[in-house]
Length: 141
Image (cartoon, rainbow, N blue to C red):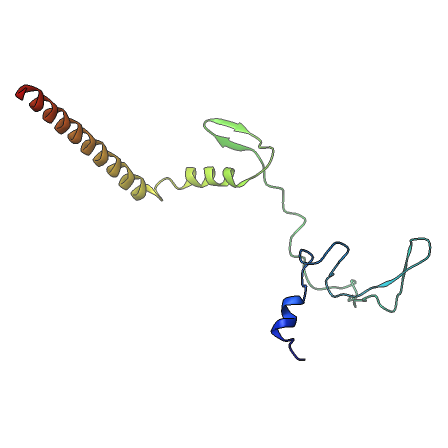
């Protein structure tokens, strides 16, 4: 296959956003039939895909998921009360993770607490120094 020239590449339209309406690119499977006069569709069975299925009698493979597994309970206990959430989302997972792993990020929390304390003491020192300089300036007048 040959490649088009750079000038021609600039004119090729590849996506539906670059082409006006009415352009459908599809997924390269081709048509499986044809439209008739009244707006219906006639399937051409020569174009359809057929798959060979093994005999199910005496089939030795097991399913991926067993049907005997009980459904897990959806009740969640948090803050001393039990409730059933309307949906399971990522926030519920994070709350449960935090509850089950309290010491995982303890070093980060301690570091942040130390930084906050240092910033507070530094702010106090700055305020005290500024009040002392203001008082010294007023006394000299």
